[in-house]
Image (cartoon, rainbow, N blue to C red; front, side, top):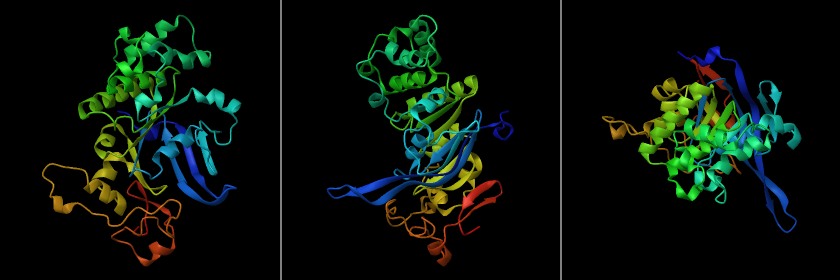
Length: 323
């Protein structure tokens, strides 16, 4: 049985901050920052899936894009097998680019409508000098890996269903033989029946190619099926991290408890659902102290003054003054 703790580290994020400037006036002067990612740390081992969950706008996609160099971090380090990726030039990124890939939420918008499947699947390998032999052979092998018929090679993205387009996106990511893939809400736009097929495909590919995933999602039901560990994100910060089963069955952080209580479970009393009052604060004007305290049902005076430090409780790392 696979044990992530026994595997070597592949990727480490250390105190990453990704802020976006707010510009105003004719001179576009910077008047503030949107703190999309604010002091985030985690690690992912070979063959492991870490799920990143939270409400829309909490910074999940931004951290995924930052890991791949698609957004510029203000501070911190992202280590891939010990090499720091942050601040690399385009040329220095090149040897890493094929090893880290991304599967986007909307497959239709992420596929070039003017390219056939054959072109889509072989463009990357050709660019990186990985095309050795007829490109049709590579494209046919990739389609086979994701369960699609080779007759699809000369068709265009608009001719496929949403699930088929996502399979093409997965095949495109595989075309460069990556070791790490960011799956950004990769199944959220699909029907439930298709979701399960794509999840099973990702699981099979992870085992076959020993892939590591950062699986970004807002659906704890899906996360439970695919991830070894889960990190819960709120307002640009990770508030709880641990084994997926432990975090979902015995959540420590009040925000995680509210998320878990919202998941429909047959036989559960609806009265047990935790309702959070108020709106999520703006990441451009985060509250002092713990970012969750304005909505937390268990907030104390210290929560309004101090940002909690991370503490490990029964194998779960939690940022909360209750511990």
